[in-house]
Length: 100
Image 1 (cartoon, helix red, strand yellow):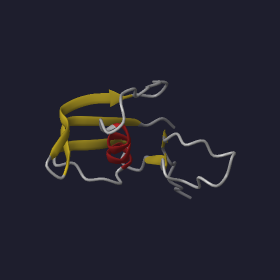
Image 2 (cartoon, rainbow, N blue to C red):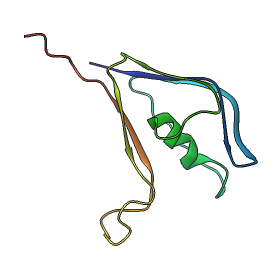
Image 3 (cartoon, rainbow, N blue to C red):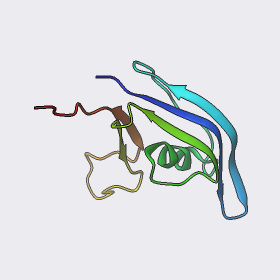
């Protein structure tokens, strides 16, 4: 089963700093996306919002189907393990419901 993640008119702030303003996009099955920018620009904040770990100040985040999950490996995960590079990752999956 495939899943789609949509963000509509999303605004995200951290304190007084506006990081994302009126962003709208869809991540569809098979899409590959990269986020590039200087430190503090809001890349990890956007990923946290996509995963549902951070609420939007304004706008809407939608998963289709509604039973879909967003997997999120936090940037601050186990820095003591050499096998865990310090890169945030996100994955979109959907669950089949058992109807037995």
